[in-house]
Length: 78
Image (cartoon, rainbow, N blue to C red; front, side):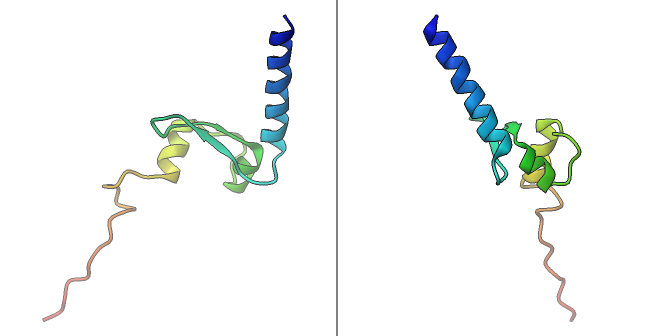
């Protein structure tokens, strides 16, 4: 029982540190999907509340073939 209580206390400490950090923090899983973002990061991006993590991931890291990532090479004028 004391082990469960210790785990609960550690989770509470993590949550306080995570949410009150003076820098943006995100937590991603092994596939690279963002599963948590702290309040500072939400504010930094100008969001009113944490967005759907899947949208946040796409917005922060668009796919390589995304038009935002394709650099256009100017066509030389002959």
